[in-house]
Length: 46
Image (cartoon, rainbow, N blue to C red):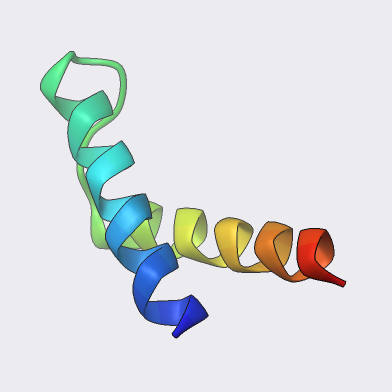
């Protein structure tokens, strides 16, 4: 569940940053953002 929700949120954030011209939307960036969000979520709920 954490993976799916983190991936959806990371995709939305990266898409938004691409939309305003800060980053480009790439699969690698979404995967990295998903991993960071998963780790942060794990640490917060521990």
